[in-house]
Length: 288
Image (tube, helix red, strand yellow):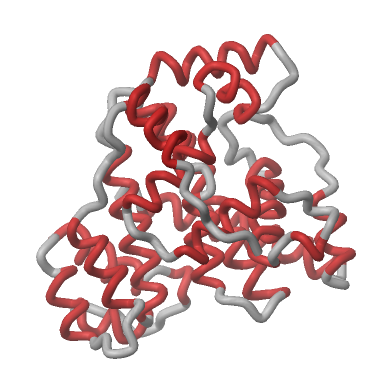
């Protein structure tokens, strides 16, 4: 896996053209620190989350979600954290905090579509990783959730540039990344990496996302499994229509992943059906 080397010239260029990148909410930073510590405890995490009523309600609501198959209703934040576990609580806080930041812009319809795609890829990455690998499914969720966060930042900070890129994509057969490089001199991957470094996210998580953007899935020795899960989840998201830029088109990513991991095709089809069902439950939770 590659090491993250921050290109400060590119960061300076991003700030020059887009302005300062959004700061991470204080609660998000604290929860990330606490859930990464071996000394973390429920009381400490609960104390910080409870400072934000909407986040507290989100954690409790998710702990009662049908996605997690709970039979007994959970009413307290402490109990919700205990039931969900630290890593799952971290995923919920990251997703809810990020959603709250980017829903505040003026281009809410486009932001919603981008967010819905991000949630679909996050959920797909988590399900694929849990089913077919022995890696951390919550790590896969976060990597999937944040894989395109640079697009959301660009939409919020420079909506006219974002619209220019979309217009050029429609006129050509080029990707968002290729057009952004021509227009800005950098792309959404560079923006996302700069943001996550600023937010002090774990280096290995940023590496997974960078590997997804930079690597060829057909070369398994070069691509970590979570990055391959993101690639397949991206294809699955497009398949169910959770995509802003590209209508679904046949992708070889699923065939490659299935072959590399010796997955039964029927098992994959079953997972894809379950994925679509869970996606609608999960995305609805953001708008309740």
